[in-house]
Image (cartoon, rainbow over all chains, first blue to last red; front, top):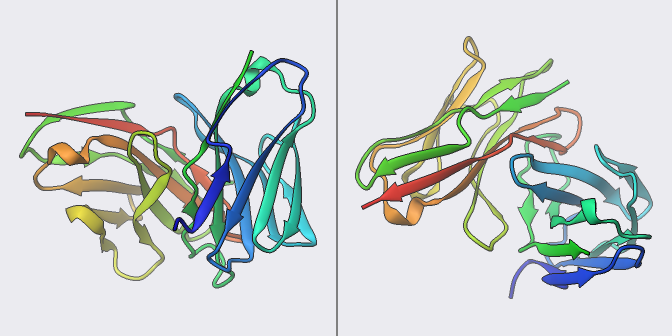
Length: 115
Length: 113
């Protein structure tokens, strides 16, 4: 079984709809992240969480919110989706340790299309 | 603030040829650097990482990268390309205080027979 799972894998929605992307991990990691990937822009950080009570905005948090329901679960919500939120979304996790040294482990991604 | 620049959004090589993907970084603190690979329709997978130990880092699938502080570079190389190496490659730098990663814009590698 995959260590980091994301649901759904693909989603098409309409402008103005609320949508939630879910991420679960079995790696036992404290830290979780949400990124979006756009062609030619690489990955950009939306939100990150170092534990259940610690949630922080990333580079591009406007229009998004998150919830850390448990150590293993981190959800990303689009309260009112708009077409420029069409992108590939990745969840990632990392272990607590010597800061900056730890690799992140990525889920398979959710392809979101907002019409 | 940290940043990463990947020169060349597309690189094409013949099977068996040298692969060279370029990455330059900017960091106000000693950097931790990473190369990730993304195969079609998959998430990112770590190829290798530099965390201030040896400057020549060996990774999976025959890839390696050399940290050159004087050139602020961390280029990725592989002596002989294989068809299965076709993918998108991302260089990333850690911000030094947390595990937050700053990614480059990626380089798509094509391998021709």
